[in-house]
Image (cartoon, rainbow, N blue to C red; front, side, top):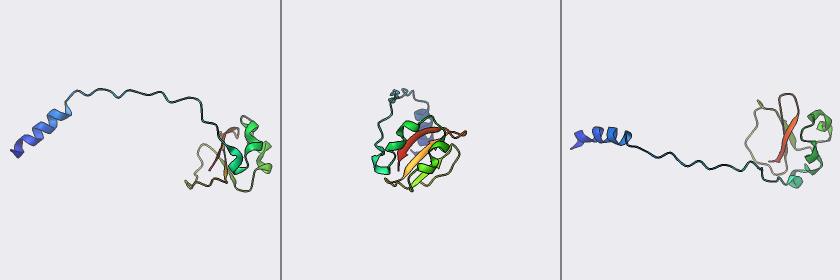
Length: 95
């Protein structure tokens, strides 16, 4: 009886499967409430160089480039400023 198990496994692997239906993710990002991390004043700075606001950032903030390593701890009072390799602000988040 057990000698048929490998054959059944091979047959199951060859069975036709249907492709999963792809759902389109919404391209509109959810609005971010920057009040928790004192980032409301910097919401209009997306697309500008980070050097223009870096001296004014709150104490608990961090600037993260594309290849930077960051901890995964979530701190609601920390402002995360994501920048491109050339230092242009891409997005702002709390956490």
